[in-house]
Amino acid sequence: MDNTLHLVGIAKKARRVEVGEEPVGAAARARQARLIVLARDAADNTCRRAAHFAEAGACPVVQCPYSKEELGGAVGRTSCAMLAFTDAGLAASFMGKLSARDAERYGETAEAVSAKAARLLQRQREQRRHEQKLQKSGAKPWVAPASRGAERRLAQRGRGAPGKGGKTYPKPGKQS
Image (spheres, rainbow, N blue to C red):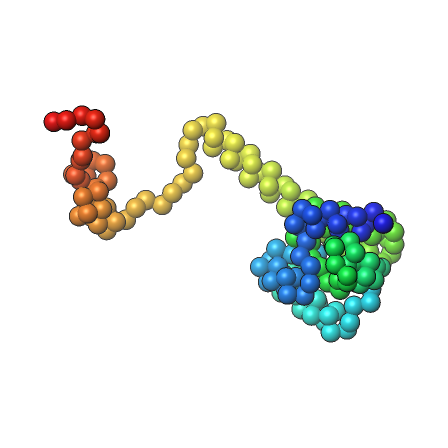
């Protein structure tokens, strides 16, 4: 099996690829699709739908050099005309392998997907650093304060907020 198709199989096993028209459309509408891949012998109607999905999800669509049977074999089906990578790193790797095979045809898309993956990775690193900084300082993430109406309702139910005059109950095991 080709290394590129092997990568598709790994992505399927990691649940980072959606296979088929409906799941690809749902992933694109949810903006989770990073790259939509079409088989070389996909029907015109399928290609048109994939273009609409890509437009809705703001992701590139590429027609790969593999047939429906070859693409389907990589994901454990008899045939597959359309799939979508939901992981930016795997999509960039897939496009890198395709561009190494045919740089003229896939080079531009590979660069765009790689740049998008790099930006996403940078945002993830920044988020991790921020969370670690919060953890070290002991600060808690910002939470919106409860409204006064919520405090009143809790007090009326006997579960008042601390220091608000709510009912107190004795601790278990102690008798008064």
